[in-house]
Length: 240
Length: 240
Image 1 (cartoon, rainbow over the protein chains, first blue to last red):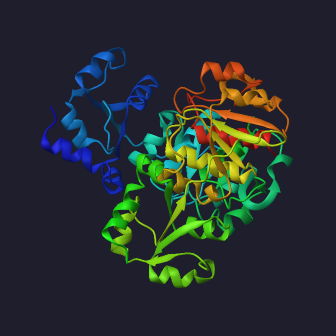
Image 2 (cartoon, chains in turn purple, yellow):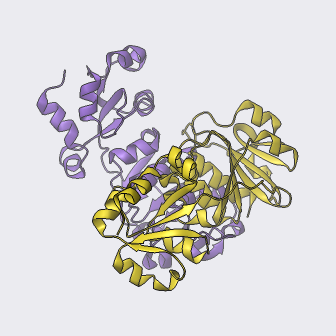
Image 3 (cartoon, chains in turn brown, blue):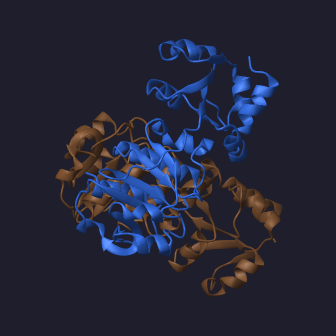
């Protein structure tokens, strides 16, 4: 059973202000919660239906679990169709980015939580271990972002940092509409791939500070590509 | 002014049943409506605020326009935050797919309207003129699909067709998790790129009938990629 105060607390974590205050966030979903548990991510508490709990017993050793019914899950869920399980986690302590010898994705002013989550999932697919977000990106612990990562938040570190100071250390590849055709680049082993805001792209300052400006050639009529799609296509050319 | 019956009619087009019955659909948005008009797509009627109408006068020659206030737009919009303009269009007459000499994307059982719209936008970016949808795909004239195409629905034909009969004509490339690494394929000028359902992928029958099975190599932990992202990465390898 959850008390009214606990329900109120979990609901409050839908808002960035309360996540920052408490240092905690919620991940929900029948796919994400087991993934967090099996990856050994320190989960503070699981709220789930009794049937979900019995089906996942082997994952719940040493985890605090509270059984809730579907009515309560509906109350504490950020989704219109709530799942069978939710997890309460601590927002990881900030760590500095490690850039040498690895490929990193850095995002400037990404505003859509779904795009951020999708890019974290792409990073995870391609073995990228960290995604850097400029301070004005949407919050990575937003329920919609967590949902869109499909569990990849368990394996990819999200680091909030100003972008420009990082560009001194390793080669950087700015996604722009007027750069060098991406087919002219070979597979890279080190560097920062930069993706900008959904409508404005990267800022002029970031573009100017990057080593390379790269462009996905446009063969048809669409004015632009979604930021997540652009990130995927670039990773599909530079990382494999 | 719109009559109550007109408002009810436009609202009904949010549902596939009424779109099929009437043969009409709605596209809304400050970006999509001008794009449809400037591409010369036959728009049956535009519903927009007076300020939007004066700002887009040059596009509205020979187009039936009804000025509506924001309260009415809110009533007839399928979006939580309605736009300044909506367009009423006829669903194009079905035409057979033309496969020789061109690249086509074919989708089997895509269920998410946002994914379908995103894939239509990717097709448009890469100059693909038609997207084939199996009969059990989400409806392409769903408001969320139209929204996600960001105007590309004006340039890409969506053709509903069974997939397997099409695979005799040209080479076909099935996106699967256990095929040949996509880096081993060169740029193609003709063929069908096949993307399957969000959770199950392509059916065994379709995979068996395809010429090639292609796989985006997985270097990290994510179990899968979003269908739209996979389509983007494959186009980014096979078309440029």
